[in-house]
Image 1 (tube, rainbow, N blue to C red):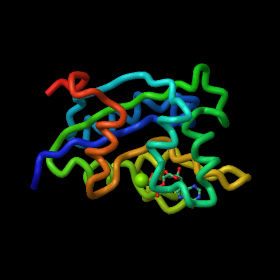
Image 2 (image 1 turned 90 degrees about the horizontal axis):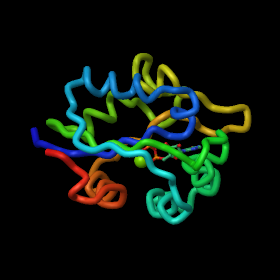
Image 3 (image 1 turned 60 degrees about the vertical axis):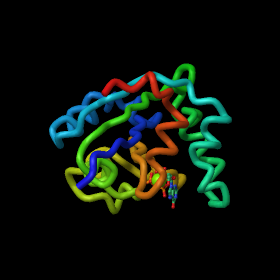
Image 4 (image 1 turned 135 degrees about the vertical axis):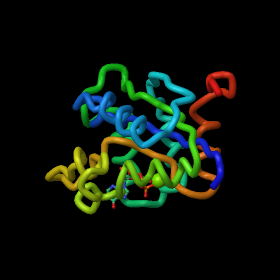
Length: 151
Ligand code: IDP
Ligand code: MG
């Protein structure tokens, strides 16, 4: 067991559907501690950096539009970013969040409860959560300044 930090984003569908409170509640109940939080207007540059590893995927351009709120009419492209901390937080938060494909996400996970695939095939999976390996540290550095984390 290791103390870890991980990045969570409330994606534009989660914002539009007013799911922020539910996401916070589920992470609270799973025993994770919020150490950073802010509202972010996602720039094109930030979006592309965040999803850099997926730049060769066929859905990449849609992903950039999605995270910038272009499918959901979010005023000022607003999303909410969090850093959560806890024992094995990266894997643990991913368990609470559920599988990438909302149709495959287990019942009771955030994505299993609230995610959907649109008729155009766009995954709307409510939240982003850092994956295993160096991803969490890299993402936290991209989205937060060190002094924005309260530990
Ligand atoms: P993750 O969000 O569960 O970590 P990743 O593979 O890192 O999944 O992909 C990032 C995001 O890209 C997903 O959350 C989802 O919004 C989108 N995505 C991933 N795979 C597909 C796909 O096969 N079709 C459409 N969108 C996808
Ligand atoms: Mg990922």
